[in-house]
Length: 373
Image 1 (cartoon, rainbow, N blue to C red):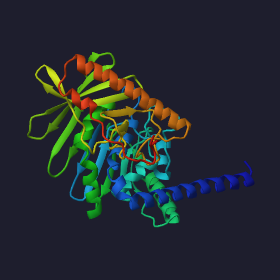
Image 2: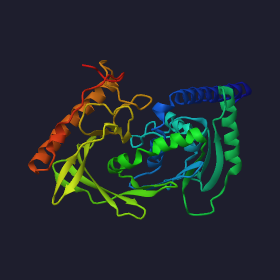
Image 3: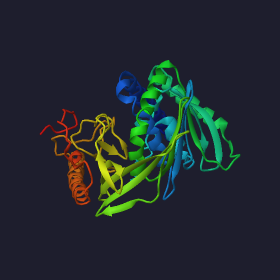
Image 4: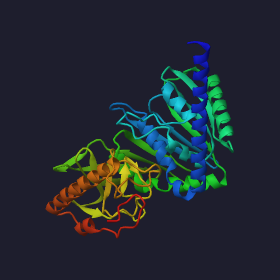
């Protein structure tokens, strides 16, 4: 490569860094100005990244620790590849082309900076090098964001050491000011109601635990699912609360392998009663809850890894346009209706209680992403 080509390559690299810095700045500005919309999302972005760190039949365990002025999120998934750590610092998703990944280190991860724009990241590389550095997004303009990216990369490189233990835990530590403490509480407030569904729909999770100054609890999926009908399965998730008896969460799922419809069950003797979903619970999941879909008119949760979501993951494209993403999503919803009818048939034949809950459908509300007709 001659000098002219080298100069072109350098200009290209600088342009990419500048573009990424601008994208980070714009997205940080957006989530800061719409914090009330995004503050429920950050914990699910971290959980999504932990799930995406697994391969094959591997399972991952997650610990979330909330202290007085710090939040720590750690998991025991796979080490970082060189590409993943580069995308973490310089921004960009590593999901592209990987159908088994929900998304990793793209715009979603930036949502976690609602907690703090400076995050201490600790982990291991696939080359058995360990690292610890601060990911700095504190810049007040794109140029300062770019400077922070370069400083973070330099600190990462200088921190590299030979791995001194067999543990492969990844950890993100966020220092919390008073505003961030409220954001942390808001995000963690959804865990108790939503984690049973998330573990049931994502078998790659072995356990998820939460520790705060007030409580210690964990959720663990039981490996033995019970097939009770054609495509209908009951999944048990156990909740452990310190100094209290464990709680059993039973969920019924009707699935075709692409889309799943899910509801909660309450055990009554040798049978079950159906339970209504809470009004503030998202109805659409892309493996994880899509906040903004709480008023979607459907009496159960619909999950599909194939959903094509809005950029902000507050809905899926279901507008009137005959676009590819819209038609794909509408096909998945149509499939969910058939799965729902399958669930109705099974619940009726099994004589489960509260069958009327299967008919509880709210009046639809207007959404930008939803076809009003």
